[in-house]
Image (tube, rainbow, N blue to C red):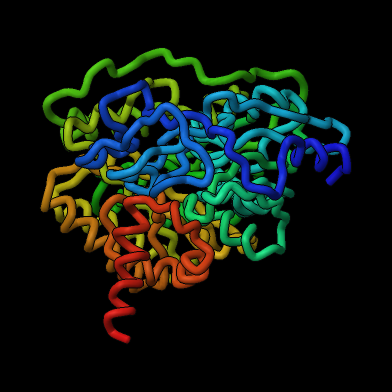
Length: 464
């Protein structure tokens, strides 16, 4: 890391407690209560206060853009400390490929700032997530097999604890390892320096081939990873029998020359939440059939903007409203390679047997790259993502069954996509969570952490 960038990353910081106010917590769109992306939100609204002074007087939760699907980004009885107001990019050095920005800057804004010759090495499925959220969740992308998780590219970060003290952290330090992937529990990430990836352009040469079934994906996936920067599969969740797991294998590499780029422009929006879910077996069956057939039998290759390749759903504003007033549950699991094909097959069958249809069903391989985080979902294996409209107890029963298959296979469930996993399932998925709890900021907590880690801590204390 250059001395100039490091000094700018630390500019304006001090190790002493200060009485200066933090950005005013607020809820997205100034709504009466904040709702996570999966909907619905906490029963008790998070309070919006004019300003928060340090030391923090009570419990609070750092907040990015609220794009987590569950209750890892909610605190029912405390303020959300919104990182976005006033957030900016402080430094970008094309000679070193290092960018320094505040935690509230969106990933889309970062991509636009460093285009066209650099790229964030890891991006999720939405450009609206923030830099702080990407670090706190140690996100992964379609190229984990080459680049690992987001935390592997963070070279420095500024963390402010509730007592007002700022810590300048670097990889290898215990508090850095607890903060990356720590779901916001160690304090408020204020700023970070991230090493970028040089690219020919941000546009992507995308190649898509049809998959006849699940076995076809597993026969092709490893070779696709070896040959391409990005690889992911869309799966038709409603296909059964010999066609179970049919879909598309999509690979991508950055295109040479000046090619299409830019941020996603919303072409459509869902203005209101319908009284019932619009995503059911009938509508999804028709959509999946058309979507599968849109790719010629011989496949297709084309150059697409980065926004179209990485963030296709961002083109539809408030697409989560399509799931209806009860919202959706996303179940994302990672399964060891040795058991992945059998487990994925069983999970798709479970969805069929429980009468549920998944709108977004995605398969991709994660590589052996080691995360610097103490707890991180990203690890070697195959990850399956399923989205279900919330139908109440029937959906919860399906999700519990999916958890069992995942854990019996030696896999893990993604905590920042969840709003209902049991404390025991979290413990099996993230067995080192106690190391994060040991350095958790005493004034920082989320509804998720209460429901899982703190419930486990109380149980262990009672048993002692």
